[in-house]
Image 1 (tube, rainbow, N blue to C red):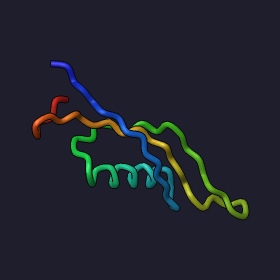
Image 2: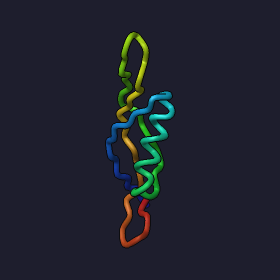
Image 3: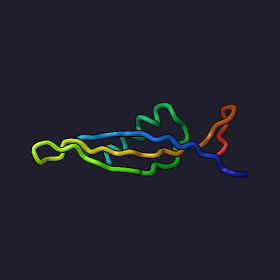
Image 4: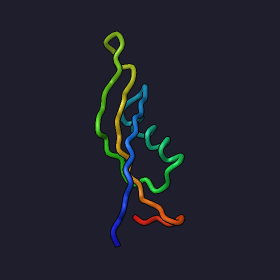
Length: 74
């Protein structure tokens, strides 16, 4: 049986760290998506003010199982 996954791309940010931005992405996606299996960080950047980092930003791809009739395929 082959596994079928769907991938979405999301943007997330945090004032604390890249790790916190990643968790924010997962928390928000997980509120409406079931079966998240992985997160791939495509890009990282920071907002800077007065030579200090004020915001950590990520672009992430989140993978999850495709569901059919309430059952997970992957």
